[in-house]
Length: 97
Image (cartoon, rainbow, N blue to C red):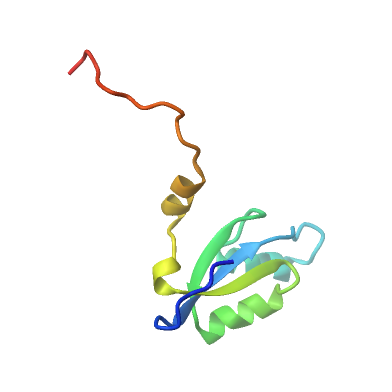
């Protein structure tokens, strides 16, 4: 986990689904969907709010939660780009253009 600087307050929850809810009841599954979690190891960000905190408490056995500042929030496409491996080569030029 990354430690945030003291100057910037933690304003978001970073929620990662660690365990599956397959064998659990529909209410827990619906809570995960309401949080935006569909797959294991998926990460979403939510602003600190009583609603988000309540949903997290309902599924606390299944998720890992961190408090992060606003600058640490990543969109789904940004997370995908961070995970993607480098191409292993670099294109210098093309004959087409």
